[in-house]
Figure 1: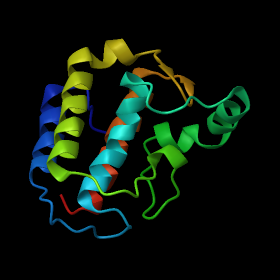
Figure 2 (figure 1 turned 45 degrees about the vertical axis):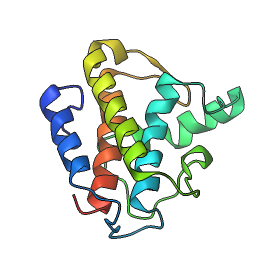
Figure 3 (figure 1 turned 135 degrees about the vertical axis):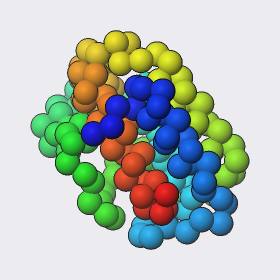
Figure 4 (figure 1 turned 90 degrees about the vertical axis):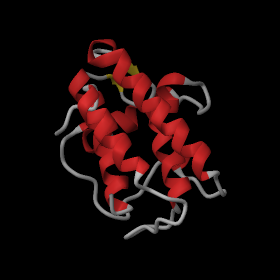
Length: 150
């Protein structure tokens, strides 16, 4: 799996994002392109903001036991898979605003680097290694950029 913490990979992902337009249609799924970018930003919001409520101890245990492996492994996501409630984006979003927010999160993450993330606590899964953080970030972005044909 590509390393999202390297400048080269981050810029490659940003280049893919920059090929999207507000009219780009998905190859599968229900989200439009602006909603997809807002959806992808949720992973970063969990790291950089308090926008989403933290799961209680019971829910965190369930997430660690049933969801963590799928999210942080290198195994690709299936098309039309289920997602957590905070990742559901149903309201209309501004394409340019969501694009810039996502790009800013990508650059911030790359600048902080893998050392910053190694052993960092995830609100949903507990402490993750730098490789698990990489897989969480890169795999999710790659899945949705592929969904939109870029």
